[in-house]
Amino acid sequence: MALTIKIGIIREGKIPNDARTPLTPQQCKTVKNNFPQVEIAVQPSAVRCFKDEEFVEQGIALQEDLSDCDILLGVKEVPVSDLIAGKTYLFFSHTIKKQPYNRNLLRAVLEKNIRLIDYEVITDDHGVRLIAFGYYAGIVGAHNGMWTYGKRTGLFELPRMYACHDYAAVKNIYQKTLLPAVKIAVTGSGRVAKGAMDNLTAMGILKVSPEMFLHRTFDHPVFTQVKSEHYVCRKSDGGFEKEEFHQHGDLYESAFHPYTQVADIFVNCIYYDKKAPMFFTVNEMQSPDFKIQVIADITCDIMPGSSVPSTIRASKIADPVYGFNPVTNAECAAFDNNGIDMMAIDNLPSELPRDASAFFGEQLITNVLPELIKGRNSAAIVRGMIAENGKLGQHFMYLEDYANIY
Image 1 (cartoon, rainbow, N blue to C red):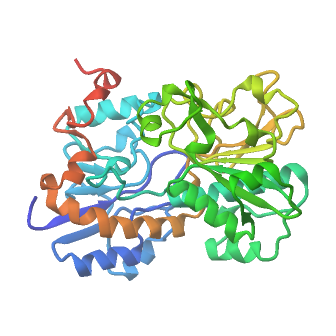
Image 2: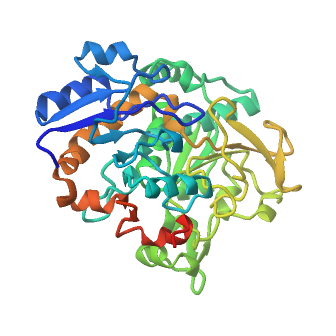
C-alpha cells in the first residue's frame, strides 16, 4: 500500500436505510491522531445516526465523491449501482452462505475488479472473529422479545429501542418496569448470546441453570442459557462431543423438546449449520405441550435452512413481528392466539445505532485497522478477502457456482 492511506466512510445505500456507521466522529479523530499515515473522508448522509456536522466538529472532511479513497468502509451491502470499480471495500456482504438475494452483488464485485473484505470473515489464527455487531444484536433482540411478549399478553409495556436516545436511557426504563414471572430460554454461547443475557440481566431477570429452568416454577422472571450440549444429542447413543457436533451436525438430533414445554419466550442466538437438526418441527409446534408463545430469532436464517421452522421471512424494524400458525404452516397476524409471534429483524443493532457504532468502531480501530495497513501481509485480511482482481479469494472458491463464473 501507499505510505498514505485514504479511507472513505460511505453513505449507507441499502433500503431500508441503516443509521449505523463503522466509525463515530470521535473515533475518526482518534484514527487521525494515532495513525498519521491515514486520512479520512466521510460521505454526507441524511440518515446516519451521527450528523455531518459532528464529523466536521472533529476535523473530518465531508466529501461526496470518494473515488480518490484507497479503502471504503460501510456497514450493510452496497447497492450495485454505487460500487466504484477497482476499490477496496469493507462491509457485510451476506454472500458467504450463498444468499440468493446478494448473488448479483458478488457478480458485480467480480466484474468491477473490487477487492471485497467482509467483516464477518476477518478472523485471527484460531478462527475467532476480530469485529462484529453481534453483541448489540443480542441486546436488541432480547429487548424485542420481551417487548413482543408484553404486547401479546398486555402484562407490561416497553418502548422500542429505536425510540430511545441510547442504551443508557433504555436501562433507566427497565428500572421502572415490573415484569411477570416469565421463563426465557436463550440458545447459544457466543457474542450474540452474551448480549442477550446481559440485557436480560439488566432488566432484573435472574439467570438459572437449565435443570432448575426445566423442573422448577418461579414467582419472578428467569432465563437460562441452553448450550449445544443441552439442545442436541448424538443419534446413536444420546452422547455429545462438541467438536464432533460442529464438524458432523448430521450425526445429531434435537434434544430441545423439554424446553418447549416450559419456556414462554425462546431467544435464538446460535450460528446454525444446515447439517445440524432444527430445534423442533412444525408438527411439534402443533402439540398442546408446546408452550412457547414468542420466538425472538436473532439468528434469523430463513427457511429452508433455518434452525427455527417458523422463521419464514425476516421482519423489519418498522414492523417487527409476524405470527406463524403451525396448524396451517403459514404466516398469520401478529399477536393472534392461534399463532406464535415471530420477531425476526435482520438488522437489530440499527435500533441502537449510536451505541452499536461506537462498539463496532472500537474493534475496527484496535483489531482491523492495523491489519488493513499491513495489506496482503496480514493473514487476517487475506482470510476475510472474498474477492480481488476479478477473482474469488483463496478461502472462497466454494462460491464459484453461486457467482456463476465460467
